[in-house]
Image (cartoon, rainbow, N blue to C red):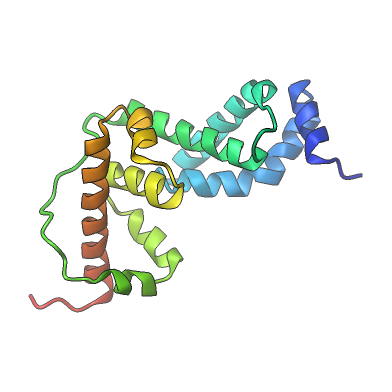
Length: 179
């Protein structure tokens, strides 16, 4: 018997362990993928994901079905990853030489999403967080600033720096440099 999403949500609202387990099994892969974009190590991502699911179970009674349930869960997962980052981070953003890399935007467009996500794993955490939130999750600079506890201007400048940093990684990884 397959239960509908509404039945699954209702079971979780009633703290039914079997419903919680089915919810976890249904969405764990997707949620782990989100967490892996925000932390460097799989074990750490799994911890963040588990913490996120605990929040989902706790907050599910407040889900109003006004939007996508999956989107609601993704948002909780992203904010859980951000909270985890903020707890561990002493210096949220790294500085680097932000001179243009010489890699055009169309070159980035020709590289697979999988390759770009792999390169992003090697980025400084602050850059990776902002790039994930804006370019992948679709958050506005205002939403990022509120979530991260930074100004909108800092969010915008860090996004620009993260793009430049990513271009340099692409150049180093996929192209022969002149040096």
